[in-house]
Length: 213
Image (cartoon, rainbow, N blue to C red):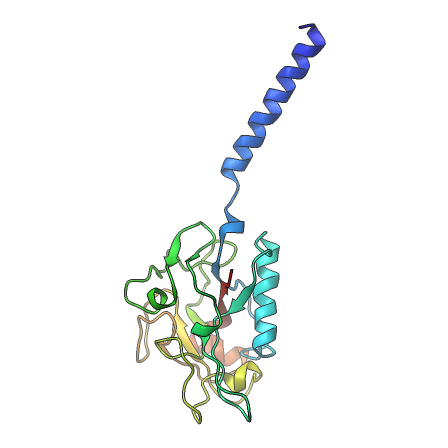
């Protein structure tokens, strides 16, 4: 082997080694299947409806390299007109789900809504791997992940209001006040639907996102 060949061989080996190190240290963003949105709509609980909330999840996932999955917001919607109620638990696929660090948070829908899930302050992270500064998370859901009966608006008019109404909230850190202070998805109602109302209650209009595939 001549000198040039030796230099090329060393270069190739160095490049391969660098690639392997980078691959091993790369964040497992593409494996992420659950996160809390790092930002909300900026307009309180007016998310533009469920479809727009889903798109928000998709955009945030794409920004961290997990956009090949199909994302859905964990939000229930009340029955309205000829439209039946929609349950958050029925929108998010079958699981299992893991956070941005690859930590499993639930095996399936039943496990997610049981006492044996792995939803804690340490595991409930944004798509950026952070804890939100305020703990209230929009869900519009009962403890079992289902919508409330007709006549009880806990979805801020199906996520289109930033004024009248109220939204059901969970506590991602599993602590605080309300009827169910340790519940991740149904701790208490918001004071209203505006950004100021949500902040005064303890939130920023954030919500959960789950990958359906």
